[in-house]
Image 1 (cartoon, one colour):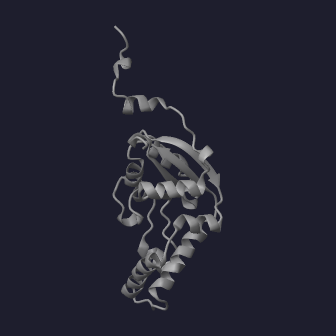
Image 2 (cartoon, helix red, strand yellow; image 1 turned 135 degrees about the vertical axis):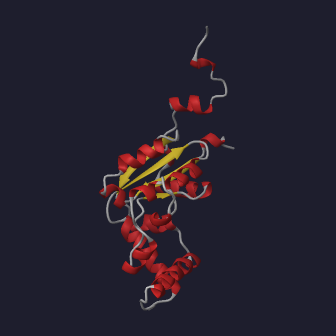
Image 3 (cartoon, helix red, strand yellow; image 1 turned 90 degrees about the horizontal axis):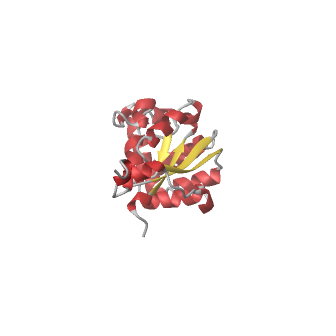
Length: 202
């Protein structure tokens, strides 16, 4: 069984993050935690990759489609589809957006990597994401405007929700040999039990 400090997570800087020149800012925020980057890949995803990545079923489509119907009703707009149809449109919109330009995928490793990154990235909707998070600080999108415009929310970053999901996603986007195993000097201060080396022998 792997040590907790070897937990891994997966992150995508989406096309909006690339186009708005936020790569450095986002990486900087992640790097400051002490997590270790073990892989990067710059690419334009395929539709097949994206559908496999999102891995959404009809229950998910029903849930998000119901939210779309609620938003349309609140704004006095006609409801022309079922919840599941709206949900499938949203999934298609997510795929279309993720394939619209290059993305930067990355793998990070460290104690509670999934939870740490999720906390930094913030909630899915930028409008209601906590202040100080990437999605709150760096963009202004919301479900309301996205639903009315018939597109997905542009929230800069994807990150894994839980460790098992991270494992699944990492296998979709990286080969095992692309995940680099190495020692980073930060790990000494973060994880070593004995820090006597800092002052050395006297």
